Amino acid sequence: MFLFVQTKRSTAALPVLSPSELSCSLTGASAAPAGVLPFVNDSLQEKYSRQVLFSGIGPEGQQRLLASRVALVGCGAIGAAAANLLVRAGVGFIRIIDRDFVEPSNLQRQTLFDETDALNVLPKAVAAERKLRSINSSISVEGLVADLTPRNAEALLGGVDLLLDGTDNFETRFLINDVAVKSSRPWIYAAGVGSYGLTMTICPAATACLACLLESGSAAPGLEETCDTIGVLGPIVNLIASLEVAEALKLLSGHPEALHGRLISCDVWTGRMQSIRVARHPECRACARRDFTYLAGEAQPRITLCGRDSVQIHERARALDLGVLEARLKPLVDSVRQNDFLLRFRVAPYEMTVFADGRAILKGTKDPAVARSLYARYIGA
Ligand SMILES: [Zn+2]
Image (cartoon, rainbow, N blue to C red; front, side):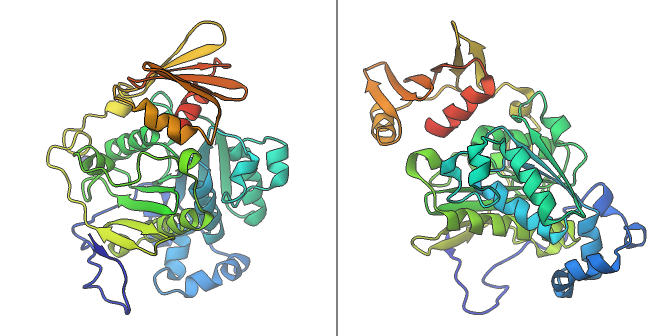
């Protein structure tokens, strides 16, 4: 790794992939030649005038943006910031998929939502769709209240040119990666926790994929923590969302040669910024062997009904240090108790019992989406 600080513009300090290395082509409407792109009227020209003036976009790039289609999975902090930027930039269609609802603790960083949304316990997809339509009524926004699963992933992520990460867990990111690699469409990984964040643009067959990066035994730091255990700062999620959307604009405006081609990490507290090139793994499960484990559902935690008003989550086999987990959870949740075999805590109205092998039982719901969401939030995906 090296410091990502530049005092002047220098392509030598920040290598990029050549156009031939990164033949990230888009399918669908935005791949259409300029001659058949939609007519841009005077008011639209006014709306996007400062962006069109930027030489990297220009009139043709703007027309391509207006004709492009994006799916955003997760509309928390990074997702909300990304959606805001995409809609203002005039990306023609954006589908927002989110399983959660707005809570007061979201408002410190989730910039699309306000106190009324939290008071009304609105689903984030619904609140986001309303807000985004009021920001730019000339583009199409579709909010879907749904948990992305192996069963629905290909349908919910269908009909778009680019997939964007706004999720809070790796189970969903690997599912997006499987769908993107299988369908040869680009996606952009983006994550933030504490004051630290990461992003990487994945162009199947041209760049490393998420499985190349994380399943080869060299997991990047900070991935085991979640925003609900160590917190998160507003500036890091907005910074990561900005980097993610800048890459999206390059792809969607027809400039894949401008992609940075690297894994970028930033820490807004220490000021440390780094970028590394990630090589494709020759034996990668997803992009080399085309073994789409997550899409096949084999890696999905099996969630089963367990007694009255309880579900059991069979997480993928891994050893949990219950002592470490207890110390992490104690300031955040109620009634944490632990013995040699399990740890139990309350997050009203739920009670979760976690076993050392990663299995958990959640009392107070029969809804697999709630179970999956609470598990990802407090135990980690
Ligand atoms: Zn790969």
